[in-house]
Image (cartoon, rainbow, N blue to C red; front, side, top):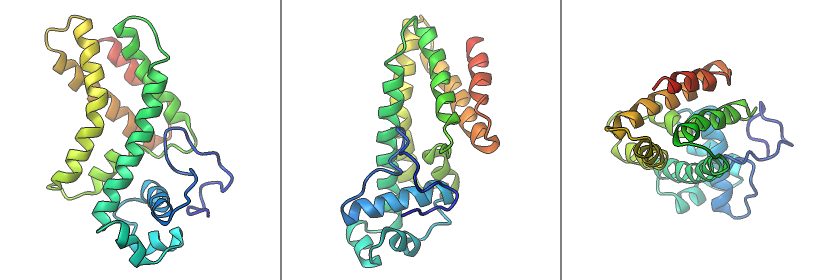
Length: 202
């Protein structure tokens, strides 16, 4: 079922996302429908009725698996986060060189992601931008997702001899998140290269 008319029905699943992957059980169909709708149409704009309809299930089935829309959002983010990290760190593990060169390769991988026609930005950034500012559970989910890359960056900074590795991690966070948002808004993958040039000066 093609949920979004702007997305080709015969597209191949992106390695960094769960969208387009086979969904055999009602729960999987709900997750797949919610993922595609949330990521392409927005979290706030997508209601559970629409998700149930596109999943081909009853609304009661949706609530049997997910107690609320918030629970469904958390499940989508957890699954998308796992898929993206598996892809991203898989790419990162192919790189070699000094810690500085490895950090620079982060932006090459981001450019690869941005260049994918299916790129829709970071679902975690998108979700938090649409959420209640006091939604602690969602902020915890975002922090957990980001902690994987932050820990890796922290380790590289230690190897490079930074006296304050946390400072480099924060600077890199600004560059990475900024590049993601800029690429999403502009559909211009070269923002990854701009961020890479700035990172080189650090």
